[in-house]
Image 1 (cartoon, one colour):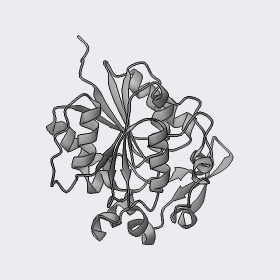
Image 2 (spheres, one colour):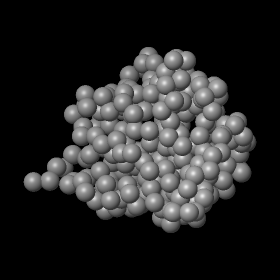
Image 3 (cartoon, one colour):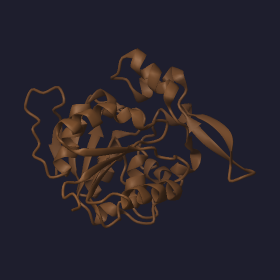
Image 4 (tube, rainbow, N blue to C red):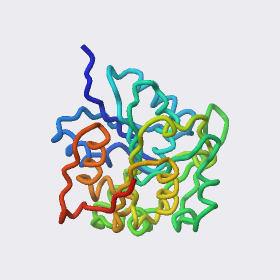
Length: 253
C-alpha cells in the first residue's frame, strides 16, 4: 500500500549542496517524516527541474517539495507533478511563468553579493563553453552566513558547488504555486537574496509566510528547528513553535 504521509524532498540552491540540510533532516526525522535531500545539478532551470521531476515521479505517495534560494525556482517548475501536495520556500524566490531572477531583482535594491560572485568558464555539452558562479571565501560569511560561527561558514564556503550562470536568466514554464498551497520562510537579514524579493514573491503567491528578522541566507544551517517546523506544518502536522523560542518569527498569511 502506498504511504499516505508525504515524503519531504529538500532541494538546495546554488553555491551550496545537500549537506546544508543536515540539521533540518535530523529535525524532520524527529517528527517521524520521511525525507530525501536531493543533489540539485545546478546546470540550468529546465535541466534541474526535469531531474527533480524524475525524482518525484519515483516516489510512491504524496510529496512536499522544499526549495532553498534558487531551489525555489526549481520546485516552482517541477512542483506541477500530480503527487506534489505543497511547496515550501526557504530563503527563496517564487518566480512566475516567464519571469527570471534578473527580472525580479531589478525591482528592488540589488544584493551586495551579486558584484562579488566569482565567474569561471567551464565546458558544457561537449565543446560548448559556459560560465558558472561561486562565492569567494572571504565574503561567504558576511554575505551568506553571517549568523554562523566563522569555522562553520568557512567549511560551507569550501564545500559549495558552483552554479551555472544561466540560472539567473532561465525562467519557469509553469508556476506550481498557482495551484498548490505554499509556505515561505523569509530571512530578514539576508545579504545574498534580498528579503524584499522573498517577501514580494511569497505574498504574491498567497503563501503562508514566516519571517525571521535576524536570519541569514544560511537559515537551514543556523535555524534548522524553525525551518523544520514550517515544513512539518506544510505536511499537515501541527506547528509546535512556542513563544520565547529563539526560532520564533513573524507570521503572515
